[in-house]
Image (cartoon, rainbow, N blue to C red; front, top):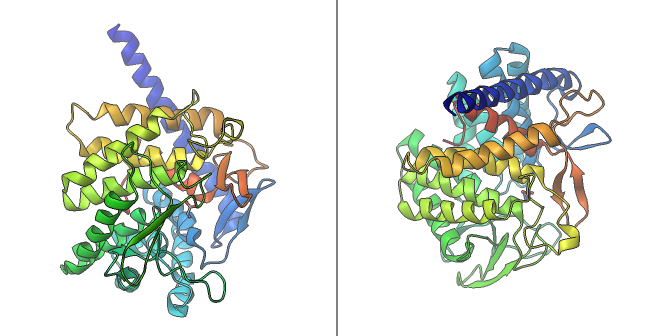
Length: 384
Ligand code: GLY
């Protein structure tokens, strides 16, 4: 029995190393075309490059930093630095910024600063943090998500679950400057998440709309999920990871309890292949549509969660995270397919709008590589 377990462990380490090497090789190859662009979704094997102002701009440089830091490939580092510099136009342009300043500058400037310690990166990250903090609505105690998408649209009262991840920029800013205000704002937002986003069963609303003047909660909305009361899987993944980060940065037990609740909901809803449907409560005929990016994001968050809990409890989160990453490696990976630039197939970007369905997504690729890095102890991780 002991020997069987030992062999199982060795095999497990084998596939993780293999997946890491394959990801590195593939990114080294695709980076020759993508360069310092900002890939978002891969269609017909080719990553479409998005505007640098789009929320996904940090994920490609984030992958480059993770791989550079562990493989020492200076070309990947140079591209990551070029991406970071290109985002200066977005930061200076200002009016297009929204709450995703977190995703964008955590994975570029915070990452770069953690690895290289250069002052311009610190300053960029602080500028982005100041901007993000300024989106806080005092009455509703939430960070406003977006600016109007169309002229005259009033979305000053809109907050979304994805923003849990962006709070890591505020936690970083407080730690870096010694000024507690950023952390206080992040905590206030996360307390609002506990009160208004998280349902008793551990599922979450994607969008909650507040009255921006009074702060009163008006309604929960379906957003990228199937319906207001359904359970968008990537939203659940953002909650697992974001709440775990909030606990990591504050030590507040309520965040850990909530992260566990979201994790149990997510894990209980996984199908046999361990990769979630895009919405756990979509009608049965739509549940075959997977979102591999939600699986990758949740797995990386679950690995962090496993490190935050009592060691006796750790396997409850670590083992399923490994099962998700293993299935993504075996059943969803496009490792050796030279006609496909994405690493992980079958992501779902925005099902209700019919956008980027059943394609590789750059954030799925990022969280997959990050999950492997966690298993291999190849930090640092930029959210922490
Ligand atoms: N809105 C960010 C996401 O698609 O998860």
